Length: 176
Image (cartoon, rainbow, N blue to C red; front, top):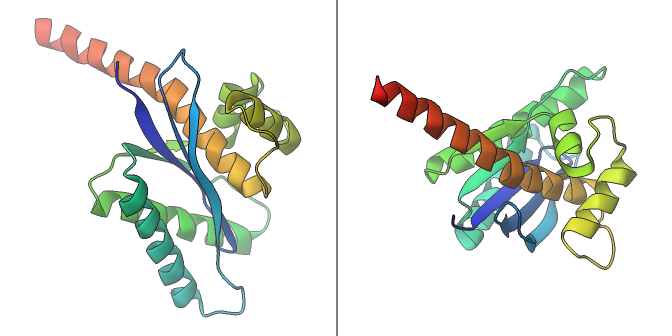
């Protein structure tokens, strides 16, 4: 089994967390890169989206991920916030598609469960486990960066299982 390099994207219009993790299930994972793409809230929406697209494109070109894991947008009380999150998510998927990189969506509870063992974990628990799993000296800041790394970790662990299951189903179908 070969190592998988995953770009995790915690979508947001003001702060978009990005984290790249490389590894294999059952072995220690490695932090490749982590950060936050910021866009000023007083900038025109179209220009904010363009800045986000350019920043994500630069990361993809520089880091060459095998897959992009994006947090699935869920219903929030603030419509304005969910719209910005959905727009940032769409930009991340667009950049990945342009480069021929597969995209996988993961729900927040799925990510929390994969990283902490509980789908109801809080941000501090997620950050603490990301710090431990990646053998870091301190939790990544801000929380958007830690969440992006958690997405990448989740995909390495869950994505591998999903891929094996899909391969088994395909093999069973071919045997018929």
